[in-house]
Image (cartoon, rainbow, N blue to C red; front, top):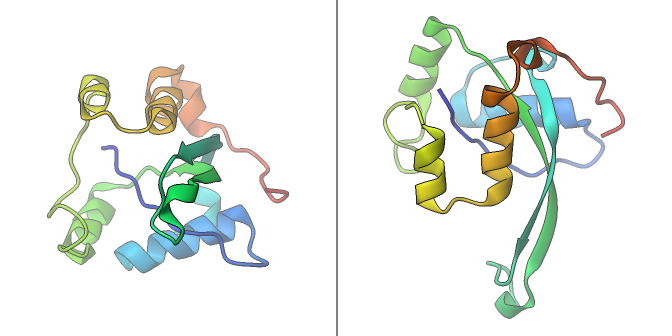
Length: 131
């Protein structure tokens, strides 16, 4: 399953603390920060933005992490998702679908790094305290 959750990093929180807090806020599932696997940092640049002045553009650096859920966790997450913000359940995405959706290239790169690299990638843990 491939699913994205986004959120800002709170001041004075490590990247792992932030991803764990964001995941809990969105899913109501308590996950130890150490379960998240660091994939990499990606830059997002857009010519427009939501904040005023909208025409000024935005440039952000995003930390990407992956998490593998067991079947019970998937059921709990699907039950707890905000139906107004997310589809009713997690679903699989093929790489072709991501390309066709014209999603940002950094998301496609994160997908490729996690799913298309050798299997040991999913089980490598990185020290990310400095992020």
